Structures are given as C-alpha cells and as structure tokens.
Image (cartoon, rainbow, N blue to C red):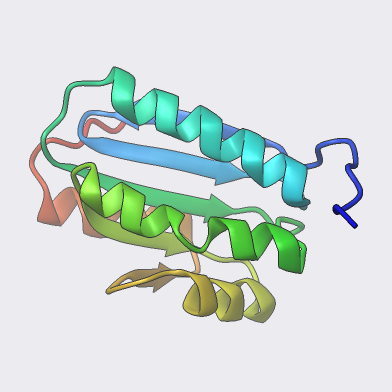
Length: 132
C-alpha cells in the first residue's frame, strides 16, 4: 500500500547574502512540505553560479519535522556538499531541534543558539558574506 498523501506543511524563506545561503524554517514540516522545500532549494542553488558557498539554517521555535520529513531530508546535506557547500551552520531554538540536526546532518557543522552569533562567526570566517 502506498503512503497517504497530505497537504504540504512547512514554511521557509531563502536568501543569498553573498556566498551565504540563509534559510529560515518557520513552521513544522511534513513529508510533502520537505519535498517542496528540497525542490525549491535545489532550484535556488543551481540557478546561482557559485563554486563555493556556506549554508545557514535558522529554525524558529516551532520548526520541526515529521519522521518521514526527516528521512527525506537525510540525503540533502550530501547534495549540498556535492554542489559547492563548504560550511553548515545552524541556529536552533530548543533541545529537540538540536537533537534533530545532530541526527540528520552528515559531516561537520556548527550549532548556535542565536542568529546574530552565527552570522558574526560566519562573517569572521568568510569574506564573501554580505550582511544587511
């Protein structure tokens, strides 16, 4: 029996800040929502000609994912790396998000509790980040 399809849930904002790709996750995601996000983020990355870029994900307080959504997202970080991402940084709002990032993300990454701290660290490490 094939899995039941539901309406997509999950909101995000994507912004290039020089070589930094910042994604803000604003709500909870189901499988269909994460599939939409993956399609969107791949189009954004592939449409921009950058050889090296950094990824910053900011999770608002209610941003979580169903087990199915997390399973789908599992391979995305390999795709990021294969397409030029050389740094993964996350801003989490709670212990559950911290645990989920550690479970899903492949490779090295940094976790912060505040967006300003993450942006300051990234700005110190990379010259191509354009913060407003």
